[in-house]
Length: 289
Image (cartoon, rainbow, N blue to C red; front, side, top):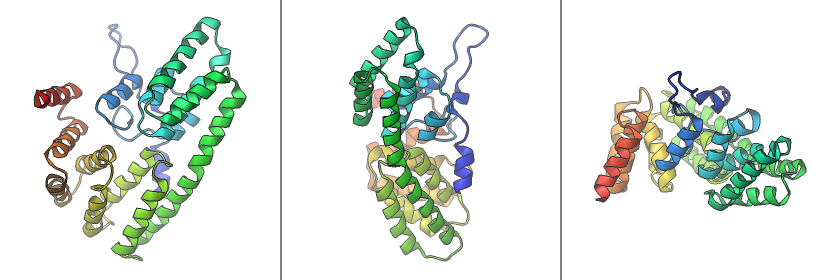
């Protein structure tokens, strides 16, 4: 699973940016996609919807500045948002005075409007430090210190998943480990990695239906935005077993209420490309009206 996660997350999000069409009409790029994620109240995904953005995408690969700015402003994963901010500040000292002035205005905007308190504070520190590389490197080191323990815990959890697949532990101890893993990594590990891990659990034929249903019951207790994203991942997973999707829909209807069920149904339809963002917005406005 860890190797698969590494492969799936190795491509730069920049690859999802679309070029300008020959007719002169600009096609949506990665920055547009991140803005769309925000409008739908979602975590940041890559444009083709195949996976979520992770911190390393901004730390290891070049990403279009507009997309990084969108991620800093709108990501609900504070680590991803902070990781997207830092490369923006690191290139300012190479710019002309006119372009630097524009970037400084961008950082003031991020400082004022970013969803994450951590990002607002980081933007403020970079502005105060005059975009000096030493201060930016200090923030990068701080980010790395937050990531390392969580990723070590993630690798340890993968070993437990392997034991479950090999039938060396039962559902009870595995759920205890899952709860501890979730508690340990909450807010400290990229949501993209956490989501990928759960996708592999729900998509694996080596994980019993009993365990999958118990995991669904755990997810039902998560905060609404995280819960909605993870449950719709299960429902939209290609080749998903009908018994599991019916169980998820039944539990959503009986445990979460009508509004949450509608939100999950709409996001599922969006992920399966049965509805566009405009369709969802029209539906929500009609309900509000």
